[in-house]
Image 1 (cartoon, rainbow, N blue to C red):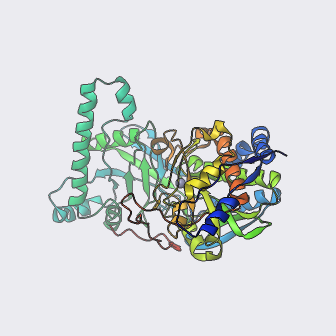
Image 2 (cartoon, helix red, strand yellow):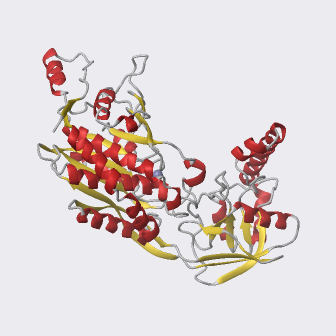
Image 3 (cartoon, rainbow, N blue to C red):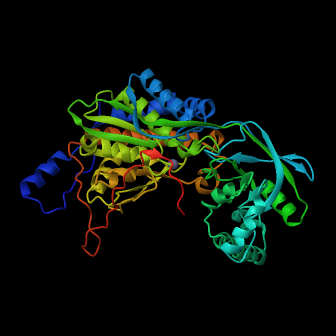
Length: 524
Ligand SMILES: [Zn+2]
Protein backbone atom coordinates (compact mmCIF):
# COMPACT_ATOMS: atom_id res chain seq x y z
CA UNK A 1 0.00 0.00 0.00
CA UNK A 2 1.47 3.30 -1.09
CA UNK A 3 0.89 6.38 1.01
CA UNK A 4 0.70 9.90 -0.30
CA UNK A 5 0.59 13.17 1.53
CA UNK A 6 -1.72 15.87 0.33
CA UNK A 7 -0.55 19.49 0.72
CA UNK A 8 -0.39 20.77 4.27
CA UNK A 9 -3.27 22.88 5.51
CA UNK A 10 -2.16 26.33 6.58
CA UNK A 11 -4.27 27.86 9.28
CA UNK A 12 -4.68 31.54 8.55
CA UNK A 13 -6.77 32.65 11.50
CA UNK A 14 -5.23 34.24 14.59
CA UNK A 15 -6.16 31.58 17.13
CA UNK A 16 -3.80 30.55 19.90
CA UNK A 17 -0.48 29.18 18.73
CA UNK A 18 -0.87 25.73 20.20
CA UNK A 19 -4.11 25.13 18.36
CA UNK A 20 -2.49 26.32 15.16
CA UNK A 21 0.39 23.90 15.52
CA UNK A 22 -1.97 21.09 16.38
CA UNK A 23 -4.10 21.91 13.37
CA UNK A 24 -1.22 21.90 10.95
CA UNK A 25 0.05 18.68 12.43
CA UNK A 26 -3.32 17.01 12.14
CA UNK A 27 -3.92 18.27 8.68
CA UNK A 28 -1.92 15.63 6.85
CA UNK A 29 -4.16 13.05 5.32
CA UNK A 30 -2.36 9.78 4.93
CA UNK A 31 -4.51 8.46 2.16
CA UNK A 32 -4.12 5.12 0.50
CA UNK A 33 -3.30 5.31 -3.19
CA UNK A 34 -4.52 1.75 -3.47
CA UNK A 35 -8.04 2.70 -2.31
CA UNK A 36 -8.10 5.54 -4.84
CA UNK A 37 -6.96 3.15 -7.57
CA UNK A 38 -9.58 0.60 -6.56
CA UNK A 39 -12.30 3.26 -6.81
CA UNK A 40 -11.17 4.15 -10.33
CA UNK A 41 -10.82 0.50 -11.40
CA UNK A 42 -14.19 -0.53 -9.99
CA UNK A 43 -16.01 2.25 -11.81
CA UNK A 44 -14.14 1.79 -15.08
CA UNK A 45 -14.49 -1.99 -15.14
CA UNK A 46 -17.73 -2.77 -13.33
CA UNK A 47 -19.92 0.32 -13.56
CA UNK A 48 -23.57 -0.28 -12.76
CA UNK A 49 -24.65 3.17 -13.91
CA UNK A 50 -26.25 2.03 -17.15
CA UNK A 51 -28.20 -0.85 -15.70
CA UNK A 52 -29.37 1.31 -12.78
CA UNK A 53 -30.39 4.13 -15.16
CA UNK A 54 -32.47 1.63 -17.14
CA UNK A 55 -34.14 0.21 -14.04
CA UNK A 56 -34.91 3.62 -12.56
CA UNK A 57 -35.76 5.72 -15.63
CA UNK A 58 -37.26 3.17 -18.03
CA UNK A 59 -38.57 0.73 -15.43
CA UNK A 60 -40.00 3.11 -12.83
CA UNK A 61 -40.13 6.39 -14.75
CA UNK A 62 -40.36 9.97 -13.47
CA UNK A 63 -40.67 10.66 -9.75
CA UNK A 64 -43.09 13.47 -9.06
CA UNK A 65 -43.68 13.97 -5.33
CA UNK A 66 -46.91 12.27 -4.28
CA UNK A 67 -46.95 9.73 -7.12
CA UNK A 68 -46.78 5.95 -6.71
CA UNK A 69 -43.63 6.05 -8.90
CA UNK A 70 -41.84 8.20 -6.33
CA UNK A 71 -42.63 5.63 -3.64
CA UNK A 72 -41.62 2.81 -5.97
CA UNK A 73 -38.27 4.55 -6.53
CA UNK A 74 -37.78 5.00 -2.75
CA UNK A 75 -38.35 1.25 -2.29
CA UNK A 76 -36.15 0.37 -5.27
CA UNK A 77 -33.25 2.38 -3.79
CA UNK A 78 -33.60 0.72 -0.37
CA UNK A 79 -33.53 -2.71 -2.05
CA UNK A 80 -30.55 -1.74 -4.21
CA UNK A 81 -28.60 -0.65 -1.14
CA UNK A 82 -29.56 -3.85 0.67
CA UNK A 83 -28.20 -5.88 -2.25
CA UNK A 84 -24.84 -4.14 -1.72
CA UNK A 85 -24.92 -4.77 2.02
CA UNK A 86 -25.69 -1.12 2.84
CA UNK A 87 -28.40 -0.23 5.39
CA UNK A 88 -30.99 2.13 4.01
CA UNK A 89 -34.36 3.47 5.10
CA UNK A 90 -37.23 5.58 3.84
CA UNK A 91 -37.74 8.43 6.26
CA UNK A 92 -41.07 10.23 6.07
CA UNK A 93 -40.61 14.02 6.03
CA UNK A 94 -44.09 15.14 5.06
CA UNK A 95 -47.12 14.50 2.91
CA UNK A 96 -48.27 15.65 -0.49
CA UNK A 97 -51.21 15.51 -2.82
CA UNK A 98 -51.20 12.01 -4.28
CA UNK A 99 -51.66 11.72 -8.03
CA UNK A 100 -51.06 9.17 -10.73
CA UNK A 101 -50.59 10.13 -14.36
CA UNK A 102 -52.81 8.25 -16.78
CA UNK A 103 -53.37 8.12 -20.51
CA UNK A 104 -53.84 11.48 -22.26
CA UNK A 105 -55.14 11.82 -25.81
CA UNK A 106 -55.38 15.25 -27.36
CA UNK A 107 -56.68 15.32 -30.92
CA UNK A 108 -57.62 17.94 -33.47
CA UNK A 109 -60.86 16.88 -35.17
CA UNK A 110 -61.46 19.90 -37.39
CA UNK A 111 -60.52 21.51 -39.83
CA UNK A 112 -58.42 18.35 -40.32
CA UNK A 113 -57.56 15.41 -38.14
CA UNK A 114 -54.34 15.12 -36.17
CA UNK A 115 -53.27 13.61 -32.86
CA UNK A 116 -51.68 16.55 -31.09
CA UNK A 117 -48.45 16.39 -29.13
CA UNK A 118 -49.35 17.42 -25.62
CA UNK A 119 -48.86 16.53 -21.98
CA UNK A 120 -51.26 16.87 -19.09
CA UNK A 121 -49.64 19.08 -16.45
CA UNK A 122 -48.71 17.51 -13.13
CA UNK A 123 -51.66 17.05 -10.72
CA UNK A 124 -54.07 18.14 -13.45
CA UNK A 125 -57.61 16.84 -13.02
CA UNK A 126 -58.63 14.25 -15.61
CA UNK A 127 -61.69 13.91 -17.83
CA UNK A 128 -62.39 10.69 -15.87
CA UNK A 129 -61.81 8.72 -19.04
CA UNK A 130 -64.47 10.60 -21.01
CA UNK A 131 -63.64 12.33 -24.28
CA UNK A 132 -64.51 16.01 -24.11
CA UNK A 133 -64.84 17.90 -27.36
CA UNK A 134 -65.19 21.60 -28.17
CA UNK A 135 -63.94 24.76 -29.83
CA UNK A 136 -61.18 27.02 -28.52
CA UNK A 137 -60.86 30.61 -27.32
CA UNK A 138 -57.71 32.68 -26.82
CA UNK A 139 -57.67 35.04 -23.84
CA UNK A 140 -58.45 38.35 -25.50
CA UNK A 141 -56.59 41.65 -25.37
CA UNK A 142 -59.14 43.77 -23.49
CA UNK A 143 -58.96 47.21 -21.91
CA UNK A 144 -59.11 46.19 -18.28
CA UNK A 145 -60.27 43.69 -15.69
CA UNK A 146 -63.87 44.92 -15.94
CA UNK A 147 -63.93 44.22 -19.69
CA UNK A 148 -62.39 40.83 -18.96
CA UNK A 149 -65.05 40.05 -16.34
CA UNK A 150 -67.74 40.90 -18.92
CA UNK A 151 -66.10 38.65 -21.52
CA UNK A 152 -65.52 35.76 -19.10
CA UNK A 153 -68.92 33.98 -19.57
CA UNK A 154 -67.91 33.30 -23.22
CA UNK A 155 -65.51 30.56 -22.08
CA UNK A 156 -68.35 28.29 -20.93
CA UNK A 157 -67.96 24.93 -22.62
CA UNK A 158 -64.79 25.98 -24.47
CA UNK A 159 -61.08 25.19 -24.23
CA UNK A 160 -59.03 28.31 -23.50
CA UNK A 161 -55.49 29.09 -24.71
CA UNK A 162 -53.59 31.13 -22.13
CA UNK A 163 -50.02 31.14 -23.54
CA UNK A 164 -48.44 33.35 -26.17
CA UNK A 165 -47.95 31.91 -29.64
CA UNK A 166 -44.17 31.80 -30.23
CA UNK A 167 -42.97 33.54 -33.40
CA UNK A 168 -40.42 30.78 -34.10
CA UNK A 169 -39.97 27.14 -33.12
CA UNK A 170 -36.26 27.35 -33.90
CA UNK A 171 -33.82 27.89 -31.03
CA UNK A 172 -31.68 31.03 -31.13
CA UNK A 173 -28.46 29.16 -31.89
CA UNK A 174 -30.11 27.89 -35.07
CA UNK A 175 -30.99 31.46 -36.08
CA UNK A 176 -27.49 32.54 -35.14
CA UNK A 177 -26.06 29.95 -37.50
CA UNK A 178 -28.25 30.52 -40.56
CA UNK A 179 -30.13 33.82 -40.39
CA UNK A 180 -28.82 37.10 -41.74
CA UNK A 181 -27.82 39.34 -38.86
CA UNK A 182 -30.65 41.68 -39.80
CA UNK A 183 -33.39 39.04 -39.72
CA UNK A 184 -32.15 37.59 -36.40
CA UNK A 185 -32.16 41.09 -34.89
CA UNK A 186 -35.66 41.66 -36.25
CA UNK A 187 -36.88 38.39 -34.74
CA UNK A 188 -35.48 39.24 -31.32
CA UNK A 189 -36.97 42.72 -31.38
CA UNK A 190 -40.42 41.53 -32.49
CA UNK A 191 -40.40 38.66 -30.02
CA UNK A 192 -39.59 41.02 -27.16
CA UNK A 193 -42.42 43.33 -28.17
CA UNK A 194 -44.78 40.37 -28.45
CA UNK A 195 -43.77 39.05 -25.02
CA UNK A 196 -44.32 42.46 -23.42
CA UNK A 197 -47.70 42.78 -25.11
CA UNK A 198 -48.70 39.29 -23.90
CA UNK A 199 -47.64 40.09 -20.35
CA UNK A 200 -49.82 43.21 -20.48
CA UNK A 201 -52.72 41.24 -21.94
CA UNK A 202 -52.57 38.81 -19.00
CA UNK A 203 -52.13 41.50 -16.35
CA UNK A 204 -55.07 43.52 -17.72
CA UNK A 205 -57.35 40.55 -16.94
CA UNK A 206 -56.68 41.30 -13.27
CA UNK A 207 -55.21 37.82 -12.79
CA UNK A 208 -51.75 36.24 -13.07
CA UNK A 209 -50.79 33.28 -15.23
CA UNK A 210 -51.25 31.20 -12.05
CA UNK A 211 -54.70 32.47 -11.06
CA UNK A 212 -56.10 32.84 -14.59
CA UNK A 213 -56.71 29.07 -15.04
CA UNK A 214 -58.65 29.04 -11.77
CA UNK A 215 -60.98 31.88 -12.78
CA UNK A 216 -61.50 30.34 -16.23
CA UNK A 217 -62.40 27.05 -14.55
CA UNK A 218 -64.92 28.85 -12.32
CA UNK A 219 -66.44 30.48 -15.40
CA UNK A 220 -67.13 27.06 -16.93
CA UNK A 221 -64.19 26.52 -19.31
CA UNK A 222 -63.81 22.91 -20.44
CA UNK A 223 -60.01 22.82 -20.22
CA UNK A 224 -56.89 25.01 -20.26
CA UNK A 225 -54.32 24.86 -23.09
CA UNK A 226 -50.81 26.13 -22.42
CA UNK A 227 -47.47 26.12 -24.18
CA UNK A 228 -44.37 26.48 -22.03
CA UNK A 229 -41.74 26.32 -24.77
CA UNK A 230 -38.21 25.64 -23.54
CA UNK A 231 -36.41 27.45 -26.40
CA UNK A 232 -35.19 24.33 -28.18
CA UNK A 233 -36.48 22.08 -30.95
CA UNK A 234 -39.41 20.04 -29.60
CA UNK A 235 -39.00 20.89 -25.91
CA UNK A 236 -41.57 22.11 -23.42
CA UNK A 237 -41.32 22.52 -19.68
CA UNK A 238 -43.99 20.57 -17.85
CA UNK A 239 -44.94 21.94 -14.42
CA UNK A 240 -48.09 21.74 -12.33
CA UNK A 241 -51.70 22.57 -13.12
CA UNK A 242 -53.61 25.13 -11.06
CA UNK A 243 -57.09 23.91 -11.98
CA UNK A 244 -58.92 21.61 -9.60
CA UNK A 245 -61.74 20.25 -11.81
CA UNK A 246 -60.86 20.71 -15.48
CA UNK A 247 -57.75 19.41 -17.29
CA UNK A 248 -54.76 21.64 -18.01
CA UNK A 249 -52.55 20.43 -20.85
CA UNK A 250 -49.36 21.72 -22.41
CA UNK A 251 -49.47 21.53 -26.20
CA UNK A 252 -46.18 21.36 -28.07
CA UNK A 253 -45.19 24.58 -29.84
CA UNK A 254 -45.85 23.26 -33.35
CA UNK A 255 -49.40 22.13 -32.59
CA UNK A 256 -50.12 25.07 -30.28
CA UNK A 257 -49.15 27.43 -33.11
CA UNK A 258 -51.41 25.64 -35.58
CA UNK A 259 -54.41 25.85 -33.24
CA UNK A 260 -53.67 29.47 -32.32
CA UNK A 261 -53.51 30.60 -35.95
CA UNK A 262 -56.68 28.67 -36.78
CA UNK A 263 -58.55 30.32 -33.90
CA UNK A 264 -57.26 33.78 -34.85
CA UNK A 265 -58.26 33.37 -38.49
CA UNK A 266 -61.76 32.28 -37.50
CA UNK A 267 -61.40 28.70 -38.72
CA UNK A 268 -62.86 27.39 -35.45
CA UNK A 269 -60.73 24.32 -34.82
CA UNK A 270 -62.35 21.57 -32.76
CA UNK A 271 -60.25 19.44 -30.43
CA UNK A 272 -60.93 16.61 -28.02
CA UNK A 273 -59.18 15.61 -24.81
CA UNK A 274 -59.38 12.35 -22.93
CA UNK A 275 -57.39 11.78 -19.75
CA UNK A 276 -57.42 9.15 -17.04
CA UNK A 277 -55.09 10.42 -14.28
CA UNK A 278 -56.10 9.64 -10.71
CA UNK A 279 -56.30 11.80 -7.62
CA UNK A 280 -55.02 9.68 -4.73
CA UNK A 281 -55.75 11.91 -1.77
CA UNK A 282 -52.94 12.86 0.60
CA UNK A 283 -49.98 10.47 0.70
CA UNK A 284 -46.78 10.31 2.81
CA UNK A 285 -43.50 11.55 1.27
CA UNK A 286 -40.05 10.18 2.01
CA UNK A 287 -36.33 10.79 1.84
CA UNK A 288 -34.26 7.67 1.22
CA UNK A 289 -31.25 7.64 3.56
CA UNK A 290 -28.44 5.05 3.38
CA UNK A 291 -25.51 4.66 5.72
CA UNK A 292 -22.05 3.12 6.03
CA UNK A 293 -21.18 3.33 9.71
CA UNK A 294 -17.96 5.03 10.73
CA UNK A 295 -15.35 3.36 12.91
CA UNK A 296 -13.19 5.98 14.67
CA UNK A 297 -15.61 8.94 14.57
CA UNK A 298 -18.97 7.28 14.07
CA UNK A 299 -20.86 10.38 15.22
CA UNK A 300 -19.26 12.58 12.55
CA UNK A 301 -20.71 12.52 9.05
CA UNK A 302 -19.72 12.87 5.42
CA UNK A 303 -22.77 13.06 3.19
CA UNK A 304 -23.60 12.39 -0.44
CA UNK A 305 -26.66 14.25 -1.64
CA UNK A 306 -28.97 14.40 -4.65
CA UNK A 307 -32.68 14.92 -4.91
CA UNK A 308 -34.63 11.85 -5.92
CA UNK A 309 -37.86 13.47 -7.07
CA UNK A 310 -38.43 15.02 -10.49
CA UNK A 311 -41.01 16.73 -12.65
CA UNK A 312 -42.78 14.19 -14.80
CA UNK A 313 -42.95 15.43 -18.41
CA UNK A 314 -40.02 13.13 -19.23
CA UNK A 315 -38.19 10.60 -17.06
CA UNK A 316 -36.36 13.03 -14.77
CA UNK A 317 -33.14 11.66 -16.32
CA UNK A 318 -30.78 14.61 -15.91
CA UNK A 319 -32.86 16.25 -13.16
CA UNK A 320 -32.01 14.43 -11.15
CA UNK A 321 -31.65 10.81 -12.22
CA UNK A 322 -28.00 11.46 -13.00
CA UNK A 323 -27.22 12.98 -9.58
CA UNK A 324 -29.12 10.15 -7.92
CA UNK A 325 -27.24 7.45 -9.84
CA UNK A 326 -23.87 9.16 -9.27
CA UNK A 327 -24.44 9.08 -5.50
CA UNK A 328 -25.74 5.49 -5.50
CA UNK A 329 -22.79 4.33 -7.59
CA UNK A 330 -20.32 6.17 -5.33
CA UNK A 331 -21.92 4.48 -2.30
CA UNK A 332 -21.71 1.05 -3.96
CA UNK A 333 -18.02 1.53 -4.69
CA UNK A 334 -17.22 2.94 -1.24
CA UNK A 335 -18.87 -0.04 0.45
CA UNK A 336 -16.76 -2.34 -1.71
CA UNK A 337 -13.33 -0.70 -1.36
CA UNK A 338 -13.68 1.33 1.87
CA UNK A 339 -16.18 -0.58 4.02
CA UNK A 340 -14.88 0.77 7.37
CA UNK A 341 -14.73 4.56 6.99
CA UNK A 342 -13.40 6.69 9.85
CA UNK A 343 -16.47 8.92 9.79
CA UNK A 344 -20.00 7.71 9.05
CA UNK A 345 -20.98 8.01 5.39
CA UNK A 346 -24.60 8.99 4.73
CA UNK A 347 -26.44 9.56 1.49
CA UNK A 348 -29.60 11.64 1.24
CA UNK A 349 -31.92 11.00 -1.72
CA UNK A 350 -34.30 13.90 -1.11
CA UNK A 351 -38.01 14.18 -1.81
CA UNK A 352 -39.78 17.27 -3.18
CA UNK A 353 -36.70 19.29 -4.06
CA UNK A 354 -38.64 20.61 -7.02
CA UNK A 355 -41.22 22.34 -4.85
CA UNK A 356 -38.63 24.12 -2.66
CA UNK A 357 -35.96 21.74 -1.30
CA UNK A 358 -38.57 20.31 1.06
CA UNK A 359 -37.06 16.89 1.81
CA UNK A 360 -33.59 18.22 2.59
CA UNK A 361 -34.89 21.20 4.60
CA UNK A 362 -36.96 18.76 6.67
CA UNK A 363 -33.90 16.55 7.21
CA UNK A 364 -31.92 19.56 8.46
CA UNK A 365 -34.79 20.42 10.84
CA UNK A 366 -35.21 16.82 12.03
CA UNK A 367 -31.54 15.82 12.43
CA UNK A 368 -29.57 18.51 14.27
CA UNK A 369 -27.37 15.72 15.70
CA UNK A 370 -26.16 14.90 12.16
CA UNK A 371 -26.07 18.42 10.76
CA UNK A 372 -24.02 19.73 13.71
CA UNK A 373 -21.46 16.96 13.15
CA UNK A 374 -21.29 17.21 9.37
CA UNK A 375 -17.77 17.26 7.96
CA UNK A 376 -18.98 17.93 4.42
CA UNK A 377 -21.89 17.26 2.08
CA UNK A 378 -21.48 16.83 -1.67
CA UNK A 379 -24.60 17.49 -3.75
CA UNK A 380 -24.99 17.06 -7.49
CA UNK A 381 -27.99 18.42 -9.33
CA UNK A 382 -27.40 20.27 -12.56
CA UNK A 383 -27.35 17.74 -15.28
CA UNK A 384 -25.41 14.92 -16.77
CA UNK A 385 -22.09 16.68 -17.42
CA UNK A 386 -18.64 16.28 -15.88
CA UNK A 387 -18.13 18.22 -12.67
CA UNK A 388 -16.66 21.56 -13.73
CA UNK A 389 -17.03 23.88 -10.72
CA UNK A 390 -16.78 23.65 -6.95
CA UNK A 391 -17.38 26.67 -4.74
CA UNK A 392 -16.42 27.02 -1.09
CA UNK A 393 -19.96 28.35 -0.38
CA UNK A 394 -18.56 31.20 1.72
CA UNK A 395 -16.78 29.01 4.31
CA UNK A 396 -13.44 30.58 5.12
CA UNK A 397 -11.48 27.32 5.27
CA UNK A 398 -13.35 25.35 2.58
CA UNK A 399 -10.56 25.83 0.05
CA UNK A 400 -7.86 24.32 2.23
CA UNK A 401 -9.94 21.22 2.85
CA UNK A 402 -11.40 20.75 -0.61
CA UNK A 403 -8.03 21.24 -2.27
CA UNK A 404 -6.55 18.66 0.06
CA UNK A 405 -9.31 16.19 -0.82
CA UNK A 406 -9.02 16.95 -4.52
CA UNK A 407 -5.31 16.15 -4.33
CA UNK A 408 -6.16 12.43 -4.36
CA UNK A 409 -8.35 12.72 -7.48
CA UNK A 410 -6.72 11.65 -10.78
CA UNK A 411 -5.61 14.67 -12.80
CA UNK A 412 -7.69 13.55 -15.79
CA UNK A 413 -10.73 14.40 -13.65
CA UNK A 414 -9.61 17.24 -11.38
CA UNK A 415 -7.65 19.33 -13.89
CA UNK A 416 -10.79 20.59 -15.60
CA UNK A 417 -12.49 21.54 -12.31
CA UNK A 418 -12.52 25.26 -11.51
CA UNK A 419 -12.67 26.08 -7.83
CA UNK A 420 -13.81 29.30 -6.22
CA UNK A 421 -12.78 29.84 -2.58
CA UNK A 422 -14.17 30.97 -0.28
CA UNK A 423 -16.99 31.66 -2.77
CA UNK A 424 -20.41 32.84 -1.70
CA UNK A 425 -23.09 30.87 0.16
CA UNK A 426 -25.78 29.45 -2.14
CA UNK A 427 -29.24 30.52 -1.08
CA UNK A 428 -31.14 27.94 -3.12
CA UNK A 429 -31.08 26.06 -6.38
CA UNK A 430 -30.56 22.66 -4.85
CA UNK A 431 -30.34 20.76 -1.59
CA UNK A 432 -26.83 21.77 -0.49
CA UNK A 433 -28.40 25.17 0.25
CA UNK A 434 -30.58 23.64 2.99
CA UNK A 435 -27.35 22.81 4.84
CA UNK A 436 -25.47 26.02 4.01
CA UNK A 437 -28.40 28.01 5.44
CA UNK A 438 -27.69 26.61 8.92
CA UNK A 439 -23.93 27.10 8.54
CA UNK A 440 -23.17 23.45 7.76
CA UNK A 441 -20.64 22.76 4.98
CA UNK A 442 -22.78 21.72 2.01
CA UNK A 443 -21.05 21.86 -1.37
CA UNK A 444 -22.32 21.64 -4.91
CA UNK A 445 -20.50 19.49 -7.44
CA UNK A 446 -21.53 21.61 -10.38
CA UNK A 447 -21.47 20.07 -13.83
CA UNK A 448 -21.04 21.09 -17.47
CA UNK A 449 -24.34 22.12 -19.00
CA UNK A 450 -24.89 19.89 -22.08
CA UNK A 451 -27.76 22.31 -22.92
CA UNK A 452 -29.39 21.48 -19.60
CA UNK A 453 -31.48 24.62 -19.16
CA UNK A 454 -33.17 24.48 -22.59
CA UNK A 455 -33.29 20.84 -23.47
CA UNK A 456 -33.59 18.69 -20.38
CA UNK A 457 -34.27 20.72 -17.21
CA UNK A 458 -37.96 20.14 -16.32
CA UNK A 459 -38.77 19.23 -19.93
CA UNK A 460 -40.61 16.50 -21.77
CA UNK A 461 -37.24 15.48 -23.27
CA UNK A 462 -35.43 14.74 -20.00
CA UNK A 463 -34.95 11.10 -20.88
CA UNK A 464 -32.40 8.26 -20.67
CA UNK A 465 -30.92 8.98 -24.11
CA UNK A 466 -29.62 12.40 -22.90
CA UNK A 467 -27.32 10.84 -20.29
CA UNK A 468 -23.56 11.05 -20.95
CA UNK A 469 -22.37 7.93 -19.18
CA UNK A 470 -18.64 8.70 -19.54
CA UNK A 471 -19.22 11.93 -17.61
CA UNK A 472 -21.30 10.13 -14.98
CA UNK A 473 -18.51 7.59 -14.45
CA UNK A 474 -16.07 10.42 -13.92
CA UNK A 475 -18.46 12.03 -11.42
CA UNK A 476 -18.97 8.80 -9.47
CA UNK A 477 -15.18 8.40 -9.16
CA UNK A 478 -14.74 12.02 -8.08
CA UNK A 479 -17.53 11.78 -5.49
CA UNK A 480 -16.26 8.50 -4.04
CA UNK A 481 -12.71 9.87 -3.69
CA UNK A 482 -13.87 13.18 -2.14
CA UNK A 483 -16.01 11.28 0.38
CA UNK A 484 -13.14 8.92 1.16
CA UNK A 485 -10.75 11.84 1.73
CA UNK A 486 -13.26 13.79 3.84
CA UNK A 487 -13.74 10.69 6.02
CA UNK A 488 -10.01 10.22 6.48
CA UNK A 489 -9.12 13.86 7.14
CA UNK A 490 -7.88 14.15 10.75
CA UNK A 491 -9.17 17.72 10.88
CA UNK A 492 -12.79 18.83 10.94
CA UNK A 493 -13.78 21.55 8.52
CA UNK A 494 -14.27 24.70 10.63
CA UNK A 495 -17.53 26.53 10.02
CA UNK A 496 -16.12 30.06 10.10
CA UNK A 497 -17.84 32.27 7.56
CA UNK A 498 -15.60 34.30 5.28
CA UNK A 499 -15.53 38.07 5.27
CA UNK A 500 -16.10 40.22 2.23
CA UNK A 501 -13.03 42.02 0.84
CA UNK A 502 -14.31 45.10 2.71
CA UNK A 503 -13.80 43.17 5.96
CA UNK A 504 -17.54 43.00 6.64
CA UNK A 505 -19.13 39.57 7.23
CA UNK A 506 -20.44 37.93 4.09
CA UNK A 507 -24.27 38.09 3.90
CA UNK A 508 -25.60 34.65 4.74
CA UNK A 509 -28.89 33.15 3.48
CA UNK A 510 -31.54 32.48 6.12
CA UNK A 511 -32.95 29.08 6.91
CA UNK A 512 -36.40 28.66 5.36
CA UNK A 513 -38.82 26.13 6.84
CA UNK A 514 -39.71 23.06 4.80
CA UNK A 515 -43.23 22.73 3.45
CA UNK A 516 -44.45 19.55 5.15
CA UNK A 517 -47.77 19.34 3.32
CA UNK A 518 -48.35 20.33 -0.26
CA UNK A 519 -49.13 21.76 -2.58
CA UNK A 520 -50.38 25.18 -1.50
CA UNK A 521 -52.76 27.06 -3.79
CA UNK A 522 -51.23 29.90 -5.84
CA UNK A 523 -51.72 33.40 -4.48
CA UNK A 524 -50.39 35.54 -7.32
ZN1 LIG B 1 -32.87 19.21 -9.83
